[in-house]
Image 1 (cartoon, rainbow, N blue to C red):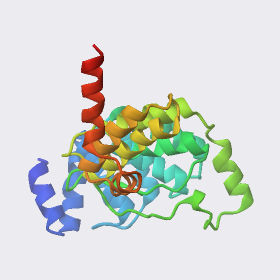
Image 2: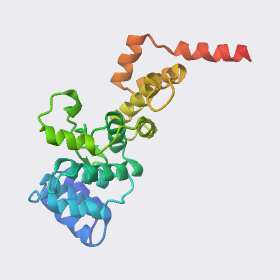
Image 3: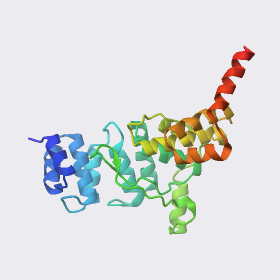
Image 4: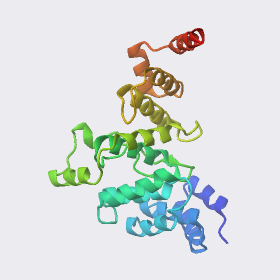
Length: 252
């Protein structure tokens, strides 16, 4: 009988073959988390021959798991044509499912995709559940930074798959900002910064100096390097908020 805790310990200890066998057993018993973990082993070739096509089937079985990890990984498979035919529209569909299920990676991705109108290369390539929700690596290389090697045809398809929508970008940045510090802190900090930028730039909402200051300071406290740089460059301080509150009280 499948025992998740035993399988997880073996995975963490690097006993991938034994862990993969246990996850497969759990998947055959109908355990969605075990199916996800076995799919991850297949995708990364951990303890078993790498097979992204077969991994897709196990991720698909687990696609309704709360948290959005399986749907996000399915989006990655379609985005890169890894074991499946590359399909940016399908990648977008799975990214939406993942974001709605709560994955901050997907929420940030959609925010940027609706800002740029492009299915760009993500910072986070895939999500593992062991240890819980840890990105396997982050690639800072972005399609929109101008250093891409994609063909003109491929780039055109990336732009055709999603349309710019400032309001949707704002809504997804807002969702990404709402996670607490226990949840992939670096990415939540990024979400808080981008949400603040919406009020700075008037992206999907009206320009609001006071909200932008408050949110930017909150992002800085959360550790966002972009927010801290913005705060330093623009001379933003907590006193700005205090002064605003005092003026409001006197006005009343």
